[in-house]
Length: 321
Image 1 (spheres, rainbow, N blue to C red):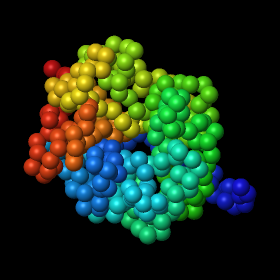
Image 2: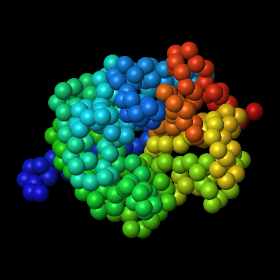
Image 3: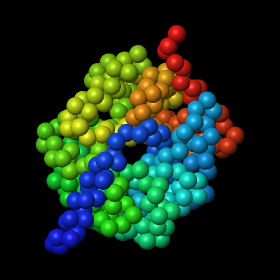
Image 4: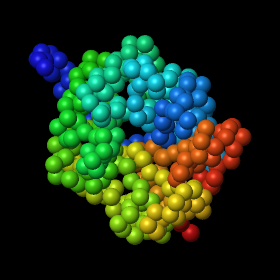
């Protein structure tokens, strides 16, 4: 693909601004999927209902950001996901996600939806965007023999996204990639780090099956991976884009899913990240709806979010005496 010198210059200027805006600033939010467990797509009203519930949680506050996995409304080829008008309606900030695994058409459709959102909603949309994640755990899935993406393909997708937002209201928004720490530790993926403004760290001690991963080990497991990611990030910010502990589900190695352990994990991980001002998108607000997730990482169980109580206390208790 050819680029004119003016576009290259514009992109370079925007890249400098985007890198500067990627610094951690204490954002607090949740991850939001595009569909319920029965594969029914979330609509604008569904997203808005969840966004408003997140803003009004007992014993905590400031959870006003949403991380999305795709720009595309579930069940369509490239329609804009209805989380966008819901975010505008509720003034919820956004960590956008573009799904890039599964072939070249994936990023083409994602960019089409992104550009349509910019055109349709203008600054009402773009002013809410905290960052753009190109892909989610693609390197991890690729290494695991699942549908993922290799480093070079991912970099190509990142460059396509940067070109697509150049000269738009998203030109200065930082672009990153979300993956597991062992994916970032893999030397063959090092070039990805050089091509992003920030790294998104997904950390789940519950799934660390080859190491001590009881709830008593969880703090060490999480921060071991997080700190390793920081060390290889080359000074670029590391955001926590997914973490949590399930309230129910099968035991994984030493990890027991329960509301009591989820509460401990919240205190040990969520509260310490908040105190440090690290950008955090928790997994998640509600996982079981129109079905029962197993394991279930949701703070809320199945049912009406407006009438349910959290499965565990969301306060942060100071360790100071």
